[in-house]
Image 1: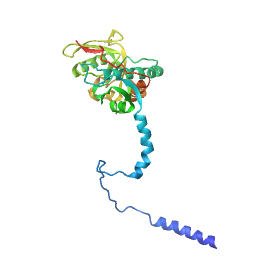
Image 2 (image 1 turned 135 degrees about the vertical axis):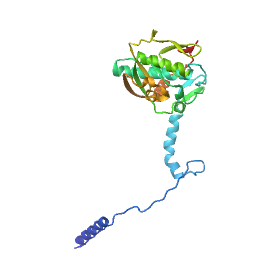
Image 3 (image 1 turned 180 degrees about the vertical axis):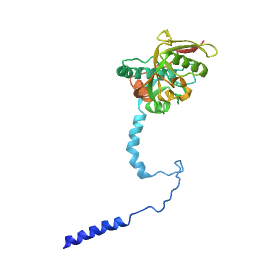
Length: 250
C-alpha cells in the first residue's frame, strides 16, 4: 500500500512539472568595468593562484641570452631583430616543409609591422617573445611564379621599409628602387616557381601584399611564428642577431 502511495506521488510530481513549465519572464543586467576600481575577490584569487603561479613560472623562464638591445628602428632596410625573426622561421619551418613535400623554402618574407616589441639585453624570457609576437599567425609556404616574385620586388621598392627577409639578397639604389635580387646566388627567373615562407596574415592580403593573392599553391606547416621563435631560442645559448648585407641601399 505504501509503495502504491509513493508511486502516485511521483506521477503527480511529473504531471505537475509537465503542466507548469518554468519560463523566464524578465532579467536585469549591468556593465561591470574591469579596472582598478574593481575590488579583488579573495575566493577567486585563491582559486586561480596555483594556475597563475605555474603560468608566471613558464612566462618568466629564460630561453636564451641576448647581448644587446634589439629594435626594429636600428636599420635602414634590414634590422637585427627582423633578421633574427626571418632566420628563425627559415631554420624551423624548412625541415617540416622538406619532410612533408620534398621541397625546400627559397626565402622568407615577414612584415616590419609584425615586430611588436623590442628585445632587451640580458635573458630573453618566454614573456618577451609573446610581447614581440602577440599574434597567433601561422607560417605558410606560398608557391609563387617568378613574375609574382618580381611584383614583390616592386612592392618592396615602394614600401621603403625594413621588412624582414631571409634567403634572398636585395640591392636598392638611393631612391629605394631594387635593381638586383638573387636567391642562392642566382637572379630571379620568371620561368621558375619559388617557395616563400610568410605568415597567413600576409598571404591573405595583409599590408597590401597583393602579390600573394593568386599563388600557385599554399602549404601549411602547422607552425605558429611565435612557436618557431621560441623553439629557435631554446636551442640557442647566445643570440647573435645583427644587421648585415641581405637587403641594403647603396
